[in-house]
Amino acid sequence: MLCNCRWSQGPPSAVRGASQSCRVFGWSGLSRRALFGMACAAACAPTAWAGPYAPAAGELGSTAIDMNDPAIVAWANGYADYLPAPGVDPTWQTPELALGPAQSNSFDIVTLGAGGRITLTFSTPIGDGPGPDFAVFENAFGDNFLELAFVEVSSDGVHFERFDSDSLTPNPVGPFEVAGVDPTHVTGLAGKYRQGFGTPFDLADLAGVDSLLDVASIGYVRLIDVVGDGSVFDTSGDPIYDPYPTFGSPGFDLDAVAVLNQAGSALPADGNGDGVVDLLDFDILASGFGAGPGVVGGASVGDFNQDGGVDLLDFDVLAQSFGAGPGVAIPEPASVGALAALISLRGRRRSGAGRYSVEGQSHEV
Image (cartoon, rainbow, N blue to C red; front, side, top):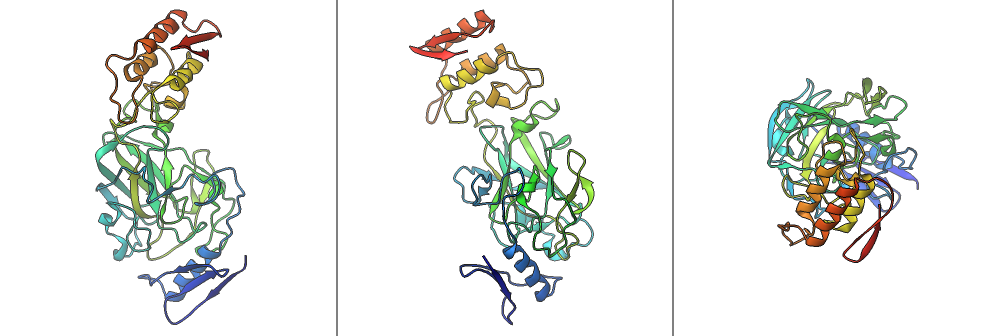
């Protein structure tokens, strides 16, 4: 589809084809023509799926979290620190604008600047539950004008752990470059999606990495701007490129941080994330029994207590919550059938493959 951009005396607009448009209303520290160039580049950028990671919001396979997703249960409502880098216009140095729900516009944001950071807090800590546990919202104009940030979390506000990241963008990206950053070349970094859509993060990815990090209770999320000139690196040691240099509001612009799972609200033995602890989760545990130490995947592989191994302690977690689900309190004690199955499997110690029967249903081990 052809992209035609036009400059007018009123607000600039970028028109993609006949149906898509983007309007931006001024920016402190930038001329309107410069801002227009940025908006046009973002709106017209190609969105072909070229890399191995999830594509742009709205495309098949995207992991983007819509700001109106009913799975969102809370938003960051405080901040522990805000350390903007030099060069950020004072207009964009209001950290309170990053609190509460995402606004999906170019103005209700706080800017970090090149290498700057902010640490958000929550009334109720984030917990490791089914699927992603929180999402970070930036204010990117389009699918390819992506300004990125590292994401770190902490239980105590002192010891932080960073999510692994990978950037496959091969070359430097100019401030108004049409190609920009392909979202399929990025994972593990905030800012992967356009405004209105958050980048999701799963605390299970950090389970067991540090005894001082309790993924069941995360009270702090820290965002650190990626200086996009290739001087900082992803987990594998490759340089990270994003639009650089930019001015006025340089670097990562934080809109909000959404909470998808709160501490104490998740079912730790819900291995398949369907909201119910049942025989399907029992199958997951039985299949993974004996794995570890150092197993990754948390509840999805049967490590219900997140200690890096799948063993009898995880059977105990399953037994304590077996039968729990929407509107159903965790049973006390667990059902007789489930406990009988657990005792049977405990006695066998997973000595070999076979079958077991629970409440008339046959299952593979």
